[in-house]
Image (cartoon, rainbow, N blue to C red; front, side, top):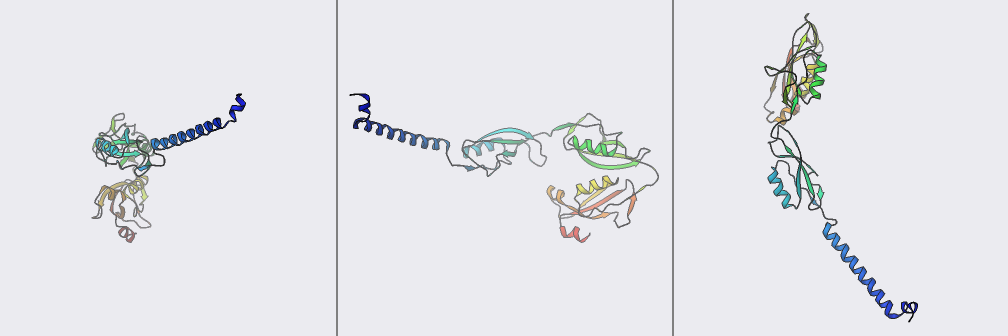
Length: 264
C-alpha cells in the first residue's frame, strides 16, 4: 500500500486523533501543574515586621511561608536598637509564598558625621552647613562683637566643638553669634500657633535667642512635643513691639488647639 493511500485509511486517522487527544491531555496537565507550582492567582498579605527583632521576624516569615533579608540599617532614636524599622513590600501588600521581604534594621549606634567649620563665617552659611551635614541647629545666642552676624563659637552644650571631629548624626549644634554694639532693635515676631521648631527658626532668622520652652499639662509624649504649638510668649507682642538684637524670648506651648487659638 502506498503512503498516500495509507494516510487516508481509517487506521491512520484513528491513531492521529488518539495522538491529538493525548497531546491535549498532556498540555492541560502541564498548565495545571504550572498554576499549582506558581500558585497562580494566589497572594497573601505581608505581615507587619515593624518593631520585631530579626529572630522574631524570621519566625513570622516562616509562619507565612515567606523569606526575609536585612538589606539596610539606619539609626532612629525613638526606636529600640536592633529592631525592624522598615520593610519592602509594606505590611498588607499581597505577595505569593516564598517571596523575599527586604528589611531595614535600627542600628545600635547612631551614624557619625564630620563637624564642618562653623566659626568665622556668617550665620546663614553656618545654618546651611549644619543642615547639609545631617546635623540640626540648637540654640543661637548673641554677644557683642565688632563683626555683626558672624559665628563666634559652635558648642554642644557647654563644650566648644572642634571642626573635623565626629558627632552623632542629628546632633543639635548651639551657635554663638556676634552682634554690633549700639543697641540695635528688631521687630518681635508673632510666634503664636507655631511649633517649637518653627518658633526657634523664626527667632533665629530675626537674630533673637530662643529662651525657655514651657510645656503645659497636655504635652506628655515626644510626639506631643513635636506637634505642640505656641499659645503665649514673653516678651508679649503687639503691632509696634521691638526688642534688642539677641534678646531672649520664652514660649509656652500646648496641644490644645483652642488654647492657642484663644490667645491669638
